[in-house]
Image (spheres, rainbow, N blue to C red):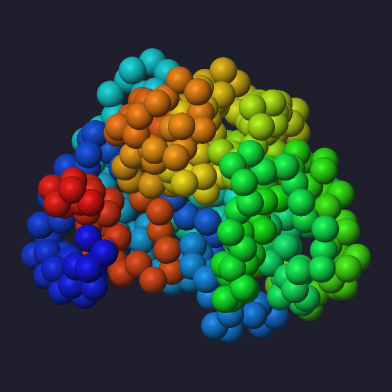
Length: 365
């Protein structure tokens, strides 16, 4: 699939989209779930240079987001998160071609940029936020801040030696992005408090980075969450601090999942029934996460991929899953179409309809 992707993106999917054929295919399972991570703000302080574009990859601009919602309303039946909850908890059938709109991470532009468009298009959304938003001034996601700090100064002289179960993780010096990701993986092995202490050390030694756009990077706070909820949107949990769950200890992974539910429910004064895994792909989580989400009392949990196949390395890490066979643990591994900034509308239609996934399965990708 890697070698034919440009052909699919620029020729096959546009041709199928023009015929309207993609809009007639029933989604896999009868419904679709689409996932965003926020909008690029119309903020002159936001750095959109090439070095930042890989972090902006999961965000779309306001015009594209509106076009997506209009497309969904034309070709699908957009459902409220509570209707999806009823289908999960009480086995109530969903209307044909239902689609649920979701958004991860809890960036403040979810409130300032996304909400007005959702309201004007009369589309509900299920927002997944971290427990960091249950504060008055949550700042940035730690790994976003880490990127800015590393851009300000390299970390080779810093003491970053968390316990590593499987030996040293490779750290590439080829570019900032790969070195940042390797460092993120190492830091995810620390518990939340130890990681916060380490981040304080990084801030001290790297110095203050250039101030990033507040609308792009800042998280919503408790007041923002209540405003989003009062506007008719639904709030779900996205862990306490957004680590790579597969690299957390059993105790820390359980705490990240369970306590996010408790803290967000306390802040909002209402039940939190849905969970989304951080990063949400087979390289960052596994069967343990599915089990912990169920044990925490969630009704369902969402991936950030359209199909699930657990890597052999991950299945070996987690006891009780000794093979890498395809797994589909029902309502605690619900697939989603992950929207990116470079996704064209025909590509969007191909993914949401399930055609892209069916094609991957047909060629064994």
